[in-house]
Image (cartoon, rainbow, N blue to C red; front, side):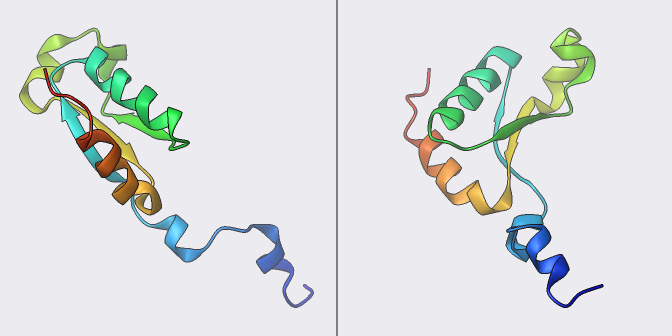
Length: 88
């Protein structure tokens, strides 16, 4: 293998490979999706964590809620964006 070959395979840094960070937890799927849409509007990719049966099992959602997670590199911005959201 040529020197530097692997370095050119990706522009990702070691920071990009840290564990994802949960930035918010919501009572229902709809609230989590609204948060994800807001993050997406700011260019932050997010995911719903532990989405069982597509959110159709409310008993699974209730004890812990629906978590929204982002890449560790985006966590600080995501916390700020979501904290600026009006709470119901």
